[in-house]
Length: 232
Length: 393
View 1 (tube, chains in turn brown, purple):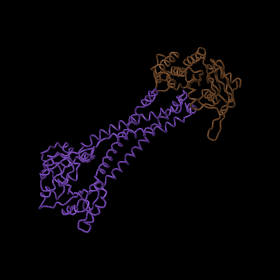
View 2 (cartoon, chains in turn cyan, purple):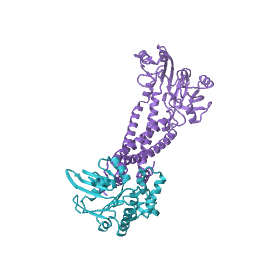
View 3 (tube, chains in turn cyan, purple):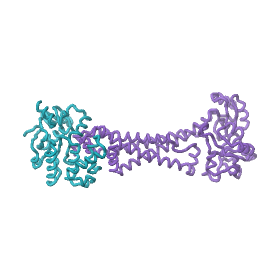
View 4 (cartoon, helix red, strand yellow):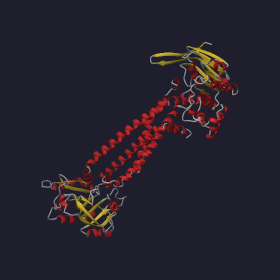
């Protein structure tokens, strides 16, 4: 318990004895089996493992977009277990940035509007929202593409817009699910460099799921999952 | 308001689908408002009769006339204040397309029994003393550009009233009404002297009584007086049927009831079909965006907010379709009275056009349709689980 409390105080991630069971028809599938994981603040953690090992499920629990069947998950100073759906949504908007494998930009919105999207949930004025979104785009090196729509951007550029969207609310934790999985090696390198920058210069705690050993090598720590338990 | 661009951009994304949904909604509201107006006009006509007036006609049908002596006998029934002979003349003005109602009446009792027909005193005086004179409603005069003093030829379509040439009538007066005191008064008819008809066909045929309009002292005695009048002629060759003016009008347009039912049925069927089409379109649009919805939720958009955004899209389609439907309906209802034949039918109804109430009802209906169409897709968005939706990416 002491570990958990310290983790909560320092704003990192604490996963304790988490079990996650999915119901498929009459079958129960245990994806995570009593898993515990502590991620200190400022850590860059790579989660690796074969398909179906439970990496993405663990990431979803940390990001607050899924709930554990049992056990507790605390992130950025908040125990997520007792939160209602609405409270969890509000918490997500303020504390976590999510980077997807396939970028998941909204196709009808241009780059700056996509980045601005999470800020619509804040009390910022239109002007402040736009300024922050442009700043985030500038940080990822895409200020000159702010009016471009996702279809007008390359995969690497789309992922950089997605990263700008993830950091625009200045969350404590960034979670990334195979962020380089859909990119060529050059773009993947650029994305990993960016993530390193956010980790080193802005002190963001990053939890990244990856299959790519080169991506995992960028992280401070690598943990391996197999059949719902951490093996290394 | 800050979410408005997101909603509008989604609608614009697949503009052909959005436009076709709006058009479908517009057709629905157009039909709803147009049919509602027509049904309203018909019902208004049915209820515009005066409770203080009875109508006595031949028991079998209005086609058969009553003997002239019936007027005195009806007038003698206790409770009867006044009686007036009326005949449907069925006159055509130059062309059958120029349809309007025209009647032969006894001018003096007619103006007493029907106080809603208001004439300037000098015109009234002139008409009462001019056997070939006629009075026309303001709207009818406007329709044909008639002025006092004009001569109007009318040829009847009813065989006993055909004399080989048109009846020539001089317009002695143009009647109007007090809309507040007598709402729904018909201003599209022509009335001329019964005596002119009687004299013109004398020797060739016989002009009986089409029907008698009977003014009674107390509307509450309508039932009793009706029975007394009919009892007077019960065992004669020409029995009568007496009823209130409202019931008479209802009988006159007996088909109107079925017509209203038919029109309402068509309207409801169309509305229900459009509801299904719109709901299906919205569902497809939402299904296509399951992953996007999951992304929005991941970013912190609550389920309620996602649901509101989807409903807003449906409501915007409803509003746009509703407004377009109202415009189309207003346009058609404005043009309808000028359309040959059809215009003559609807033109006989007073104040024909899209009323603010019907427009309000149409808009309300459009919003309701939008809401109903958007509700289930919105619920899908509300219920969708982020992790499950993201797994499908």
